[in-house]
Image 1: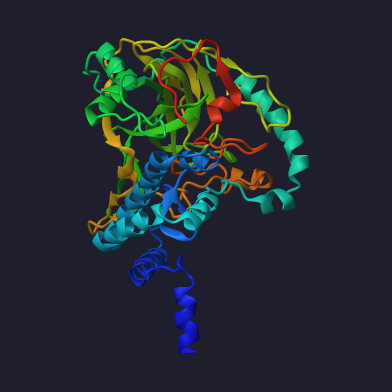
Image 2: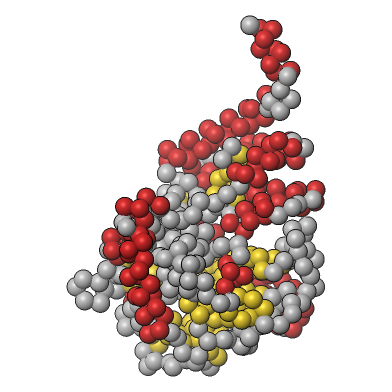
Length: 463
């Protein structure tokens, strides 16, 4: 039996080295500890069989694209970076170090680059599950429910379409981040001339990215009928419960999309309100926490290509394309149609007008000259590590990507469409934006799904 065991080991060149086996055990043990404590970070998805890597929808889209050696290395490095980031959040919540995990990750990634069979397995495993539950659609008679939903969606898009200008209500509050930014022309030039990695991602110095965020930050004009209409900062109370209170903040993060053989930068601006207050006694949309994300997609030359916005529940996804784009013909089989407002020509500063209570977008146009309430600029990652009463950081989001306590009664009415806890606030990467069909806010080629260029593209191409 000993000889048989030795021959089996010798005959399997892909068998992990004992040190690699120990490293995999270290990761698996960390996963068990995280699961027991309920502090899993859902910012990116784990890769089955590769506990030292994580993936998002953008990176998962490269698995069907041929990659040369530099491209493989760049892609693998980004998967490893996502795991590094997620582990840092989880281990901080456990009060545990990450040194052993970081060391093991470097070793496992290095061995993976040279393993052909393991690489093929990785490409098949690097997927992100859809944020829909198929069993709900089956049990909820989705085909029947979808017929009625289409009518309601069409009515909403017609009656709630925002104006191409701002009407400043008497009770409005105007919010903006500090407008003291570098020369916009110089910032745009620096972006347009940035180098790119082997996958086509622009390589930007931190000051250039910060200048881009400042240059394209919107001004928020919010009609305020109560404190629930005041933009705030998310903190934890003395009991550890998350809350939204003064001072106001905007949470920023960069993302990317793939559009016509290019990887384009997206600037995301996220605001939060204490609640969506109830209108009447039986308002199924009301609940604790509310908020919006405003996203600017930059073309290869640094000029905005499109703007879009979504509530932090994934609801009311609304597009504001620039004249550089044209809407593709709508395919009736492609779920619900996109909600597209009037074309928006890039301005020096864009204002976004929100209604009181519902926080629906009422208008988008030139920012008003009113002196704003200054927003504190924070990185979105701070939401994943909010200090608690004992100083231990805990995420605003649960391991399933939802904000506990933000659930709405509408989740019962919308159950047949398969969206988990419809109406609840969500972590980035978990915004399902359609009830009919399947659509995600972070879908890798979402822009190309609905738009094509109205003019030839400029700038470098990617894989």
